Image (cartoon, rainbow, N blue to C red; front, side, top):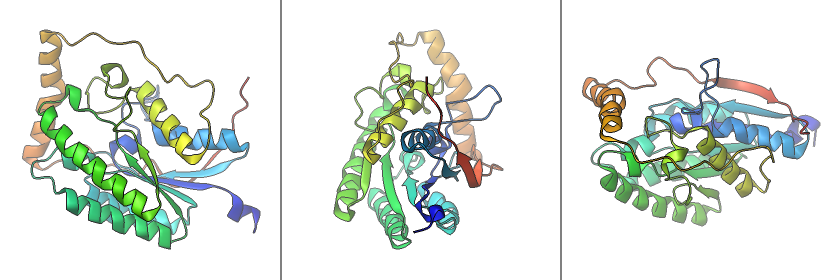
Amino acid sequence: MSEDRKRIRFVAIGDSFTEGVGDEQPDGSVRGWADLVAQGIADAEGEAIQYANLAIRGKLLGPIIAEQLEPAMALQPTLVTLNGGGNDLLRPGTDIPQICNAVELALRRIIDGGSRPVLLAGPNPTGGLPRGDTIRTKGDALLRATADLAERLGVTYIDNWSDPHLPQRQYWSTDRLHLAPVGHHRVAANVLRGLGYAHPEDWLLDADPTPPPTRRDQLRYTREHVLPWVKRRLTGRSSGDGRSAKFASWSTVEPRTLR
């Protein structure tokens, strides 16, 4: 096998969770768990890997698969992570069997294409969301169904929904829908563990508890985050409109030398 064939080629597909929203960098870009996983693999392997991230915020599962899966497979990856359905859970009338059927077809396409699929359950944000109990019930059902699917297909499954730390307020950004940087690091550590790697020793995975929001905090949250979300739904717009993938083709991730 050639050196090029041996090199790890990792593609991530999904929505804002995989794009990295909530882990904003000083230049305004986002990083997120998938970028961190790429770095963690390179560090663990001690050699450069190829990495692409086709995820775009605001996408439902159907468009994720329709728009990202084949471009991902065209890159001939060795590893593909898939997460989606979080935005579907926020909509009324979520069809869990339909989501699972789409996920199964996507996983089989990845396997048939000669790549290793990794299926992720997203973290549970419902403690801070309006209608959180309803969304949690649907999320629990989706977790059970996708976990059974992954077991049946022999696919690596990363259960972030059941992580005991991630539902806590300190792991979430101010919009309560996207993870804060420490939350993205914890997800990345979960993924690396599932792939058989230890996370880099310099990663911060724990955060101090944050106090419950005050009434003023709640009003600000509604004004700054809930009402704009509702407006987008009513006007048929998405936070991902006009956006393209941040790494649509291969980028090289070099291993770091940790001191």
